[in-house]
Length: 265
Image (cartoon, rainbow, N blue to C red; front, top):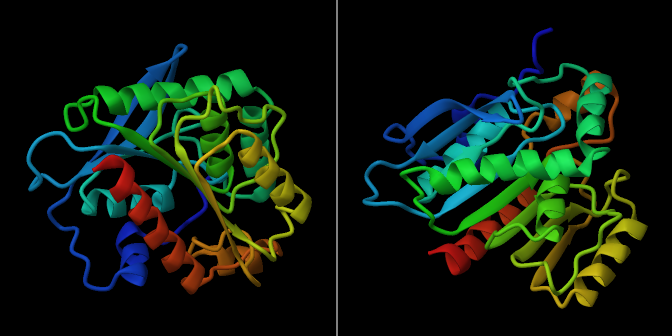
């Protein structure tokens, strides 16, 4: 089955930041191994920046490791980071239909140990790369990927910043002050039926109880997948309650960059 087609990295970046030049970035598709399985990632950095630089992991939506995740890695590389978009499903699998995407994502969400181990394998790969060389690392996740990034933070992953964009917030393993290390950013669509108010309220309480350094931005009238320029076509194709919102996309991205600047550089 062919994967869901998304905007090319160049088109997605141009929509956000007209004039941003990425021609000189080094980009590379890579494979890495975990528990006898092969995973297909994508790493990007700006070779004009001297020496190792902080790393950022990008965790994909439930569609799998596709062009959208890679485009976000390129954006982060243009900001001076070594960015690695990882593969949570293995073998670079991607979905073409929500039912298949839900199946792939469910297999990971239902096995938290496997989820954390797969995230950890990508984290280890990035930390060990010559272009990161044990510099601090952050994690950014979209939808399903936001859930993964938050669970890694709750489990004590060594991260400086964790950012979830339109990801689910519910958990069976709440954060504690003893384990939670990063600054936590959550960007949510207030009109997203997939993240009901009860989840948002419980997350706020969880972060307060964990004495976390956290920010939650609720964008009024904004739906799920608001950062993905393909969301409107996905909504039409599959009759899903998702939609792109340029303001929320731009504002959340700028907020992320500010946090990365404070915590990583």
